[in-house]
Every structure is written in C-alpha cells, then in structure tokens.
Image (cartoon, rainbow, N blue to C red; front, top):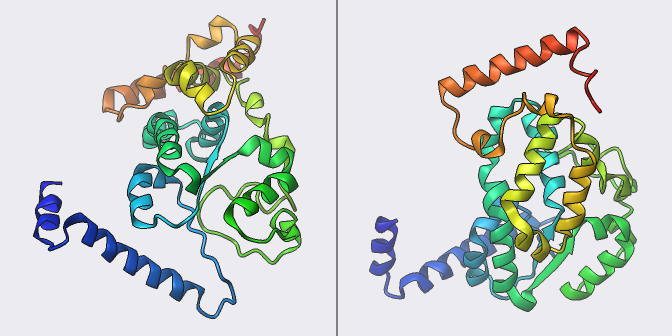
Length: 271
C-alpha cells in the first residue's frame, strides 16, 4: 500500500488523476464489449465489489448502483450448499463474504445515497413485476417483460456463479425464499446458522431489513437434539484458516458421524 501511495503522490493530479485513468480504461472496455451487440447498457455484476464501493462511486459518480440484500441465513445456506458441500473446512474461503460483506454493504448504501438502489431478494421473487418496474424507474430505463420472463430467452450458459437453479426456471422462483429452512435439519448447518446470527447481531440484521426475532425463533423451533450438536463445529473455528491438527479432528468427527448413521443411531435421537 505504501508503494501505491508513493505512486499516486508522483502523479501531478494525485489520486484524482489515477481515478480518471481508471475511469477512461473501464469506459473504453465497456464500450468495446457493447460494440456490435446493439445494446445501450453494460451491467457489471461482481459480488465482491462490496470491498470497493466507495472507490467505485468515486470512479463512476454518475453510474447507478444496485445493492442486492438477502436474508443472511439464506446466504449462509447457499454458500454451504453450493460451494462448501460438507467440506466444512472450506468455509474459511468465504470468511469475508459472511463476516465483512453485510457491514460493507450497509456502509455502501450510505455512501451511494440516491445513486444506489436497494433491492431485497425476497421482495424481488415475491413481486418481480413490481420490483423490476421500481428498479427501472430509478435507473431511468424502460421496463420490459423479458426482464422477469427470462425463460423464453436464449440465455447463454454462464461459467461462474450458482448454476444449479437458474436454468430450471423461467422466472424468479418464490420457493427459494424459505429454502434455507430445509437445510438446518443438518445439525452442523443449524450450528453455523445459530452462530452466524449471533455473530452479525440484531443491529446489523435489522439494518439490512430483516427481523432478528423471527430468525431467532425459526432457529429455536428447529433446534436439533443436543446429542447431534455434540458432533458439530463452531462457526468462528471453521472460519479460521485450517491447520493440520484441525483437519485431523474434523475428519475424525466426520468418520464417527458416518459410523453412527450406518448403525442407525444418528437419526434415532431427534426429539
């Protein structure tokens, strides 16, 4: 960072000149990407832009920014299902997405002001027509039914992101709102969700527009038997970069729980 600061100080216009250079480069690349497409707008969707919202806004102060929020427990469930897949030690790769992103997104909303459009995933899938019309109105673009009836379009197959459901539906799927609730039948997932809710805390959850009380009650109503929770790992432990001793311990517990399942013991104590 000190090297970057030294470079910026060497520019006649300092950091502002650097931002102007970045602005010119990306404007040129976006324009070239649109060339021959017949399209007027370029949408840059990169989830980890939450790290640089302030810098993006300084670079493109006239751009529109869409901040998509989702129930944090549903986000956790999606990460576990899509990327971790019971390789619990792999959760450390998403530490920033889970721990820092909610706070940085809330800070970004404040920074962007009227240039930012806040969208909540749950409302979008419940009322896609109304939400997309609201978004289009804020962006100053025309609404088109194809925005929500995308199943009839020839959508290219993306190589990135979660591709599990997007090609199975023709429009936003309401069933996905409560999908995370079915994953907490797994005691390890329940433990992680419970820890995560506590880690984020009431203030952050409610600033994001969700009810801490309702989420806490949902977890309480679906709490696994204590016997099954004995064989789970805390969130803060799994978010740390794994060392060999931790890997050995996780593998040993995984072997034990598999053995209990084979013997029919694991599922008998559920009350």
